[in-house]
Image (cartoon, rainbow, N blue to C red; front, side, top):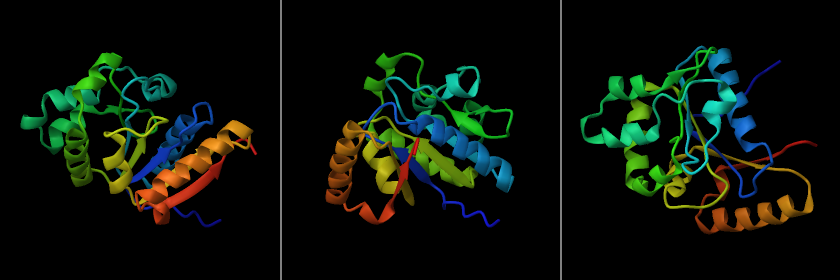
Length: 183
């Protein structure tokens, strides 16, 4: 079988909760890490209620908020130390444990973190929240591919249509791959 992997970085996104976006992001990141043996990082950009640390079974020792607090002093090695290693070899940068921290994270911070991650990781997977926000836009714009996850229930299809309209207005349509989950 031929396995075609997306080129780094890529974003997993949906505007509807409960469609399996985070599960797909985590499982895809683990698969890429195992299949390629290359340095792979999964970033939980759901700053208000990210669940990657919980779902992957890793301790939430450090988070993206800790990286931002040290952003003026951070380099490739320091950033890597803030990422927790999963048993698969995947590195994970979790969302903050405290949702109040999201207010202190800007789009500019996300862009700076992305540039540093790109210097050390072969694959960057970003699990975005299920809404458009100024911290999500740079992740979408910097992505080589945007994996938009949906299910086939009526509410999810309506949200998918609206999501596609916004992404088209942002001139990102060429980057989109739609994943229909639970089909």
